[in-house]
Length: 244
Image (tube, rainbow, N blue to C red; front, side, top):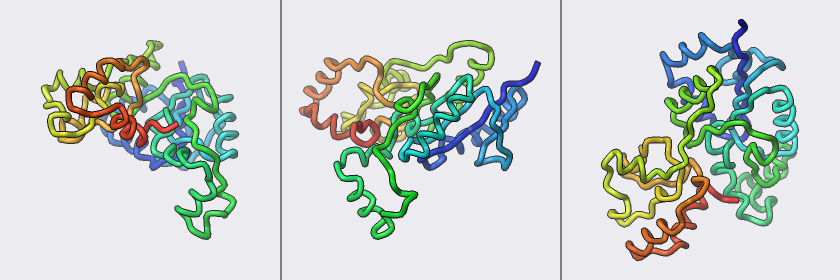
């Protein structure tokens, strides 16, 4: 029985999520034993038009990239969005808050902003261009979660992706709530699965895994009220990773 062919592609991103795959170290060797990696620009020079699973890192910011993603989707049996940029647009969606993208390009690149390869449109997540089968959340992704999801897919099981908030993991880890430090934390409404590393390290959750499917708005409001904050305080935090 032939091994599933896997190809990894990148679009607009820092490639940090792919680096997390490399950081699997010994675990990556176990995965390579059961899959055939046929394309991965960060790790190999070979290319292939034949693959069963396509893993996409990065958001879509140009017309030519949208067309390239459509081609990849047409060839893949399974398409996985890897990391915040691919799953929801990530930091790149910050530019969507501006009406004039020409002004954005000029602000960032100066006179070079009009170069053809910088002719971008409003940033899109992968599933705003093509159908996505699975999402691996985070900025960067959690390497252990990546391995768990890939192993599940390889044995034909639906991967487990939490649909409860980061607060659940914070409480399980006995972290002191970041609101007690006068910080606005997005933990009450952001999807868990990362094991709350930011609050554990003394930082608030800043939303890189995206909203849970059905955020408990009333519970979030209660938290805001308890600490004399407003919903606008929460919305301002959401802009970083959850811009539209």
